[in-house]
Structure formats: C-alpha cells, structure tokens
Length: 259
Image 1: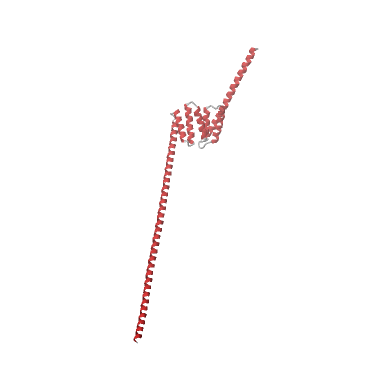
Image 2 (image 1 turned 30 degrees about the horizontal axis):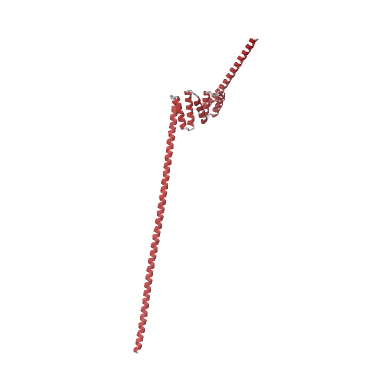
C-alpha cells in the first residue's frame, strides 16, 4: 500500500513538472510570437523606401513591447523596440532606449551598437555635442567600426559648419553694430553741421540787421544835418531881412532929421 502511494505521488510530481515546463514553453512561444509579429510589421514598413510607414512601425513597436513585458531583459528585443521608435522619428524615446541598452549590456560589441544608434538619435535631434560624445564612446568599445567613424566625422563636420555659421552671424552683427554706430555718428555730425549752419545764418541775419540799423542811423544823421543847415539858412535869411529893415529905418530917420 505504501509503495502504491509513493508511486502515485511520484506520478503527480512528474505531471506537475510537465505542466510547469509546458506553461513556460507556451509563454516563451507567446513572447516569440509577439516578436515575430513585430518583425513582420517592421519588414512590411521597410518595403516602401520612398516614405516612412509610421503605421506599420507603430504596430511593430506595440508587439515588441508585449514581448518585453513578458521578458524585460532580452537585449535583442530592446534593440528591435528602439529601432521601431527611431523609424517613427521618436528620437527622444529611441535615444533613451539605446542609452538603457548601453548601460545594462556588458558585451562590448552590443554596447558599441547601442551607443552608435544613440549617436544617430541625438544627431537627428540636432544635439551635435551629445551625438559626438556617443560616437566616441562607441569607438572606445569597438575601434574598428568604420560606420561609427564615418558618422563621427559627419557630426563633427556639422558642428564645424554650425560654428562657422555662428561666427559669420556674430561678424554680421558686429558689422551692423558698427554701421549703426557710424550712422549715428553721421547723424550727430549732420546735426552739428546744421546747428552751426543755423548759428551762422543767425549771425549773418544779426550782422545784416546791425548794418541796416547803422545805415538808418547814418541816414538819420544826414537828415538831421540837412535840417540843421536848412534852419541855419533860414535863420540867416531872416537876419538879413531884419538887417535890411533896420537899415531902411535908420535911413528914414536920418532923412527926416536932415529935413
């Protein structure tokens, strides 16, 4: 009886183990099913190279997330998700995901790939300094990666063009500033010239007024002299008349005495 019980217990234990294995296998198959479905959507989106099929890439993203919910530490699926985000131009999210992969993986090649793609995401977001740093870090983990070297040179060239453009803009600003300064200086000089011109005109008017006043005074003096001369002449004539009358009177008195 005891042997039979042991036998039944052993069979039950084996059945439980088989069920656990079956559940695990089924779960793994479901995870891979999500990944396969995501890959199908991804490949479908890649067929048309003339446009970005964000709808298919978004479907792929959803399937990859489902798989990662079941198995979060699967680096390959993380790469797939990050690629799907990148293809949708979700560069902030893809950069964050590639950074996570680079931080948690210990494999230098995988780390280099993650940093390379991180650099691409940052570059697409115009974050040139950060992308250059990511490419350099990728090359430290895989110095032979020619594609990363090319992207690094490309980012550095863009950085140089940006700096040259800024220098040109700063130079133009300085030139405009100097030009405005010269214009203001010319305006100040024009104002000074106009003020001096007005002052000279005022002086000329004043001089002219004084000259006219002097001329008037001269004429008045001449008139006064003429009037005085005329008065003197009249006075002389009157005196002459008076003398003649007095002379006639004297003669008359003298004649009367003689008579």
